[in-house]
Image (cartoon, rainbow, N blue to C red; front, side, top):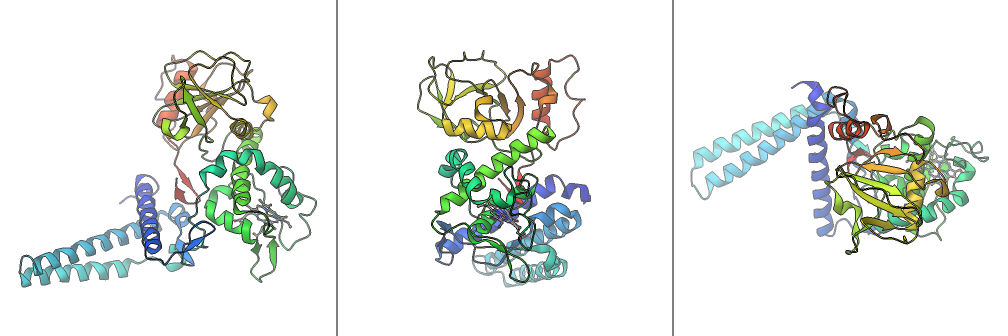
Amino acid sequence: MEEGWWRGPGLDALIAAVSALERGSWALLHALGLAPLVHGQPAWPFGARVSVAMLTLDPSHARRVGMVMLLLAAAVLAGLLAALLRWPLRSRKASAVALGLGAALLAGAAWTWPAPELLWAPAVPTSFHRLPDAVAGEAALHGGRLYAQHCAACHGANGDGDGPQAEGGPRWPPTLNRGLLWRRSDGELFWHLRHGMADGQGQPTMPALPHELPDDAAWALLAWLQLHAAGQQLARAGEWQLPLAAPALDVRCDGAAPRELQALRGQRLRIVALRPDQPALREDPRFQTVTLSPAPRAQAEGCEAVSEAAWQAYALVAGVAPDALAGTEFLVDRDGWLRARRKADDAPWSDAMLVCRGSGAASGAMADAGADGLERLLARMDAEPVRPVRGGRLH
Ligand code: HEC
């Protein structure tokens, strides 16, 4: 198979299969009592996990891992077939052939087995932990304060690794605004915050978060850092360089019970930040409009979300102060990724406002030049879906 395939659909399928296997064995171990709770979620009991970063970086390694998985799956099927032939069908000979085939497939898998240093990455007990939803929703309110208090001295007021204490330690603190937070899983970052970090000689490089702070403080910090880093990228480079799920909202449409933003997946959304006294925007049939306000609006109509925390979260990802957010619009694609932003005083929508580019083919060809700016933008959003790999995991 072409190696290119192992960078695209083959890689996605492989990562999904590896993830499913890891999560499946983890759930099984937990059910058997072998993965007790750590920091509120089942612990990953091994010191290693499959390195998804390596699969992404090296297509020939990915192909090898893919082959091994196919061979192992075929060997399991041959084993099942052998059992079926041996017992219910009572055909010893055919069963022996199937068994031989299974053994050959196993030998093939062992022969193809990839180098361990490529296959495995170090893991911590919280490698597979997920950021609790309840914390994510409120993180924008508390994370910034915690950051200023406990982290800014080293990592700098804006996360660039330039705080007054940056120099003192054995290692320079990294900038938190580039890809770092996306390369690791949430759970691994959490472990590093909660337990601190050390260099190869065991010399502490980063202090652990104080004991008196609950786990939720570490999660809130992480969620805040991710929103903040996205906003810093947008403010400096003019784009969200890494995939960013639309921050959580409780959306109430025409007075019905509120639903989470996730429940609206599958539709294109426009999220418009408006102060309570600003008039709602006109609906557009090309997407569902959700009006976000920090406080209840005088005239409730259509779909709206009222939340101070969400207002602050959207201000963070837009890279502006909360008072400067009013009038900003965001477009969310059908998979829930934030894709485009239009500021209050910008020109009408155009495809240049696609600030999170997907991975698909270069655009141009798909939308005809005569279509309006929004039409072209939406066409590109659909044609260039986001590759949802984060911390080497599918979301
Ligand atoms: C005393 C200085 C110092 C303080 C205080 C500090 N850090 Fe760090 N931080 C570092 C250094 C140094 C590293 C690099 C450690 C290494 O690679 O061994 C680091 C690494 C990190 C990383 C990268 C972790 C990874 O997986 O590679 C994150 C995220 C981080 N810090 C966040 C924080 C947060 C959030 C706080 C506040 C709760 C904080 N840091 C407080 C110095 C500090």
